[in-house]
Length: 487
Image 1 (tube, one colour):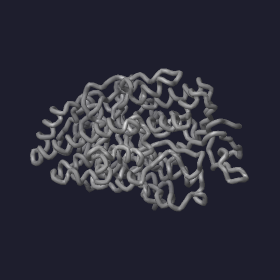
Image 2 (cartoon, rainbow, N blue to C red):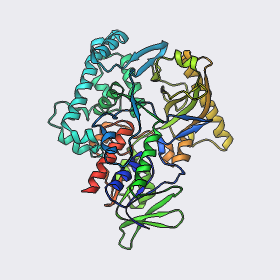
Image 3 (spheres, rainbow, N blue to C red):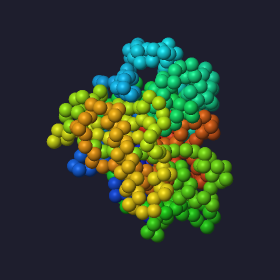
Image 4 (tube, helix red, strand yellow):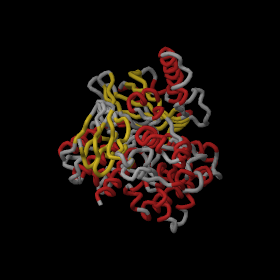
């Protein structure tokens, strides 16, 4: 079969670019190896409950923002959303709750109360965070709206803006050096949760953008995050595009001249792409699997080895109504005041995200923390060893959850768990790394883009979009690529 564009992978990045190009008249085929689309935002159902796969930080649903811009082009309605009227919250040990209030004055008062030892330094840090975020958005509109993959060009275009270029070269810790260790840990917990990068490694500019996310308008999505993927599928089909599930792609297909002309499927079929091939795989899998390491330039191999990412340890649970009423918020971040987890490979902070109560009155809840990936694939000689490791991680993490959230009591019940091996089995992402790429200065200064070493092969997804957080960043990057290919 022959198409204008072939998209490999049905995550939100691949779905978005496929939906946009299909709506613009391109003949598009999307190939997904699994039986459902969505990737990391795919619908998670266990025991009759639907669980939120993300962190509950749904942004950019306002008029003129990225989802409005994308769905205004599509022949389907955007998912129904509702503005959340409560603030996101960070809980430290000893039940210290710090609301991330949207109003600056109220938020600064919360900082002064929570960090009296460095109150004014903490306030000045967040004033700079807000200032640089606004400068970036106002002076680099293409980055704001999603041409996020071309990071280097963006940095050059705003080099005239005081402070922005410097913020790509220095870490967040260097800007917080005159604050207390407790405040630094407060920032560190958010960066680890939202960007998978510690305060000592994270470039300050992406740190600013991420730290402002929970202080912007947050929304709940009727039907959950997976509804985004489902609406995009509906749009592709209405526009005449093709979606093929259970269709694993083996590699790029090349002609006699060595040009990429499409993809070879595991079944032996070749799907031809006349104009472009778009990979919604990770940057490592795009080169390691599609392009092939023997065709990957040495400098790209070196960059792939330097890029770091993490996996996820996730608990799907239900919370009864009594416990739910005792909790400080519906969605929040919990962090130990000091790092140094007693649980091997699992981070010292976790997000707690509750959905809508089910018919039995219990609320499906997702508890999510980042995890190193290699330990989940090593030193396990049998399936029993793997199950024992997963059970041990659950028991130790469960103890931490109850210690930091004593309000839960006996009102929470585990339904299912997932770890990097689970995500690898579901998505085939390298080592189950589903948490993007570390936002460190060397990566930002090297620049990133949708293009690859193959002229007609492009990438979308969380490992190539930069200067953003979560699904909106990936959707923005996909819109930018659709615009590029539509010229």
